[in-house]
Length: 337
Ligand SMILES: Cc1cc2nc3c(=O)[nH]c(=O)nc-3n(C[C@H](O)[C@H](O)[C@H](O)COP(=O)(O)O)c2cc1C
Image 1 (tube, protein in one colour):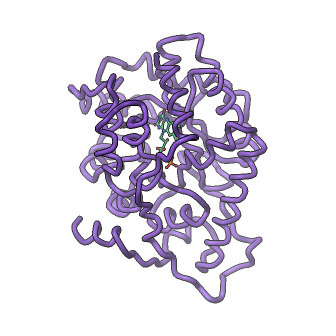
Image 2 (cartoon, protein in one colour):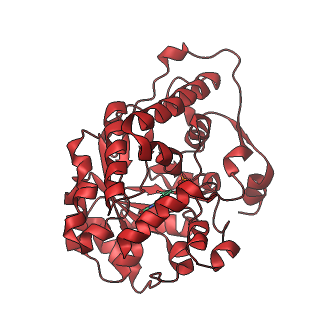
């Protein structure tokens, strides 16, 4: 059952080490500016993303829905996002599409004034027959401003019961992207340049890069019995690498995959992300309470402000011009890209 699987994912992500073995954000160094441009208190984190104003360039990214504990997690996150004025995505809505009585585990977020609400559906489900009706239902369920379509073929391939059909997915996506505000999203293996070009041409509104550095879904599935998960643990494109190779496509990018703190977030902005997506870093707090999520996110927001201050920028927009140094493994990736 999907509900049980989703619960297992949460449990594994809390109790086990599911991180990729290398965090590529450590290979991005922002350059210090000796005399900051403005007072720390005057650094502005406000951004507009997909037509919505956010108080900070942060989205708590897709994690869950479909069971009682997920309802609590989604509610804690939504309450925190309302309080902080930032965006939120729910996890895959497939469970509720297939079982209406689970809808409230996602719809609970509508009780909060979250400035940017994102729904979430898997691309493999589109390949297997989901269409306009399911997309409409998913969006209405959370009163979504846009819908993330997640591409998780790595996870599906490792999972014993995975959906690995692709079929005429590209044609389906082209049609849907003209009718709905869609965001193309990975789940930890990164969006390739070829796919990025396709999404841009098809009319997707944004790309959530979710590359290698943080949560590895090969690892998660390994703990669920997918033996190949150990082999493919670190498979995929590094998150900062994806931002660099997609930057000139001129489509709004969500920098995600392995963001642990506000400094990582600042690095993502410097590499071209319009906002950042954070998932597992807030999960333990979300299991606890909305207050705990607010506390964790406030720490991240403060670190982000400090990083912007110390690079001599005044706001998120100016972070795009910040200079940085790339070293280590990430440098190797860029040399051979
Ligand atoms: C417990 C958990 C459940 C997730 N479920 C979904 C999901 O249903 N749909 C989706 O698009 N991504 C899902 N993700 C992936 C995240 O949205 C994100 O892309 C990925 O975890 C990388 O970010 P992180 O390193 O900050 O965790 C999930 C992540 C976690 C930790």
